[in-house]
Length: 124
Image (cartoon, rainbow, N blue to C red; front, side):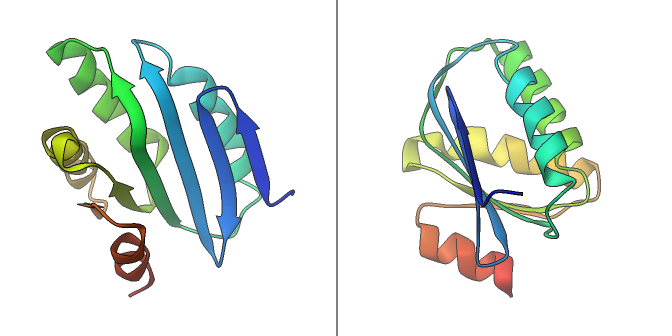
């Protein structure tokens, strides 16, 4: 597997045992389906259960119901992974709800405003 993959709206790379995902642009209902399919295919070739998911360049244009669906969908795709979301402070509510969706499935997820703090939490 190559150590990185990029498509419109998503970048993925493996760095020091951590799968780093970066989402950018305006995210609308259903936009997560193609990246999720690609992630699932690529992740099967990567020996890591750690995800650093950088949302700082993403804007979500979703209703409350669509956001809740989005959180559940992402949590299911990342089932079995430890996930650290990297966010801007104004994305805190979004990240908290995402972490709650992971917790409902029994997985660990947390959010951070710095890459360093997120990486340290993943590696502990």
